[in-house]
Length: 268
Image (cartoon, rainbow, N blue to C red):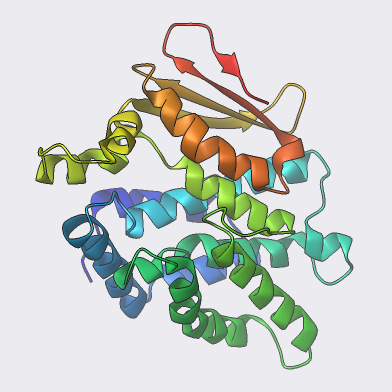
């Protein structure tokens, strides 16, 4: 099935930083034509029917890549994920749950925007269960169900409308919000130039030039958002920061934002 150059590049970047079972899970998801078709259609509905920004294969892979980067930074800092801290699984098991949630969280956009996270869970479960059956033996029922639950929590919580409790789901929430660079809003802007209520979201996201995720100086994760104009602060304060604020990962994050070549404002 056809994949865009951008999607292929992102898949290569994701696989490059994975190994073992998490890499195998990603390979199976990337190779699934049914999933590819569902993600493509979610994007058609999102952009052409509903007038939203990218919610398709590229967005879901960007969110996945960002989630893995932050996961690795927490690991470097010695922060245990919930499955490991609770004695249920390993960091690798947590990463599989994060992969599922990040790559499948917007499938529900193929149906509707309202409560699409619940629709996404319904659509994602067959893919999750199919792969879990191949990754885990029948002698690991609790671990299998734990990974499944982490994946569902990550999808359930990605809109920041419900309280989540695991670091794994918290990473998915922030990774989803961090995909806000101007390219994500380009297509709906091109399709419609007619002003309408809510265009501040397009305008503000169009001002976001770069989202950088790196090792922090005081905390494990540094997120720096560079923008071309101050209207981008709307995107930070009304969309991104509320997601970080509700995430269990918040204590481990430094957040900076500002117009390029000017002093950065520190939020966390």
